[in-house]
Image 1 (cartoon, rainbow, N blue to C red):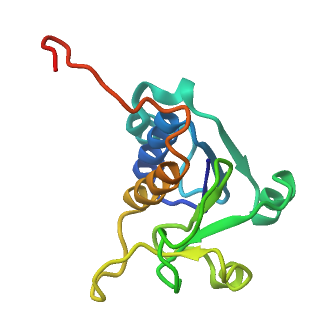
Image 2 (image 1 turned 90 degrees about the vertical axis):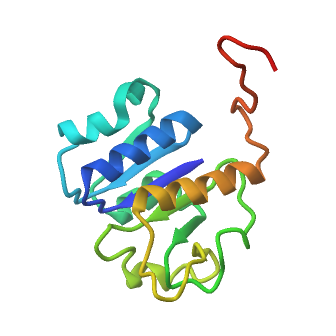
Length: 162
């Protein structure tokens, strides 16, 4: 799985997303400009000690991202979609893109992807969910659809037994 952040602005959100990517084996793609330095303490702190598990790449712009990834099929997470995030079929190599916190993915990009735009259902009065929560919701649906390949799905108690 691939999580793509288009011009993220808030380091804590990106740090939380980085931790989710590290815990799931998803690759993280960051499209500049970023609203923070990749070395910022808040970004590192939110990811805690998971940075060594993270595969992260940065790009100067959306066009460079497309070129360096061979123009992949991209699911666009947006509140403007007619399809929900569970209406589509993800595969193990899906790219899922999210826009910046203040404005989402630019409409100039969205109009090129009408069939792969997805939304998370919510009440009409809500503008959007937090970016890191949105990534987790959609990423875990995509992972569920691909049977959580390579992920541990069972746990054990520390002191007692089931």
